[in-house]
Length: 480
Image (cartoon, rainbow, N blue to C red; front, side):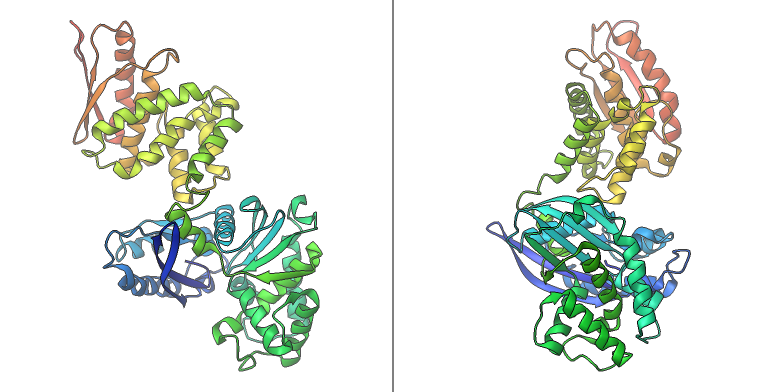
């Protein structure tokens, strides 16, 4: 669900490859519905919802299908995106993943890596409707990811909304793009690229326009300047280009200004259009084809190493938590959250690297604000919420999220059982019954008295979240 167009792709896996069986797009122009306060208009919401209703007719009857709804820039910045998501859920019972700019850039490179033979040093640009992603990669692995606040729809609305094309407007658009590209890190200015690629409909349209006007699809700064002069000479694009569809031609000047700035800032000689992009990246990751199938696990492992997590302890907590999870997952309807809970258990102490006092708060901040490849914004914030609530007072927002509250309960129990940080974890059994969680402790353990005290205190934290702890110690005289 892009800022300009919504795309539907249906594919099937065949012998480790993806076969595309259906593709279509609708130009929704979601970004045109954003006002200066980033509030999405009712008209734009309706356009998006109606498009998704149409798409749903294409795949609603497909059996055993895995379905992902991925949204980019406009829903990232829309302050009322919850209204859009609520309306969509009335028709499509699937979660909408609003991905970060870095995640969008990673998936774009992933898609290109499956459709191109990449070199040692690659530079990729994708000009979307609301943002532009720029990636430095080494062979099939992305290395540096950046998302810039400039897109063909947003720039069209700001500089070319009335359809008039002149030098002053082009100059203003290029200057605004220059400001964005000037923020790129040093990695983008090292030059000597083996391969420079551009994905997205805008770059394809530029290539098509060059082929029609000058007999070559080659995207060079010289050709881009020639195209700019021609557009200014025409003054508008009404019926001017036969090879570029009218809807794409409308936003061509804005995309061209961004592309010219990109060439100038990075001193590029040429760029080639590539068909692979975000959609292909999402598809290959869904199918778990290639090197990215364990991207979330690699991300969790990388964060754990970066912040010097005590991995042996983290794994003990994770194993304990997942044993508890298996005992209640079906009753509490938590099956879809197993990986989230495992990630939270592994990283629950990530904040200790900053300060052991209130480390749950430091950990939540780290996770909420870090670049986490493979995690969409919702999953990332859920992970931060679990980590921030694994000890002390839980986050009050859990009052409105009963399933996450139950995950927090299991995480807190797992952490509590392993407070000694030595030896094997104490094995306890749990049984869910509505909001009640029956906890049975083993017989003859010296730590039981202390654990009972901890659980009594814990029940006071959890009851307001909708979880009542009912604790039984299997030892004489210890019944709570």
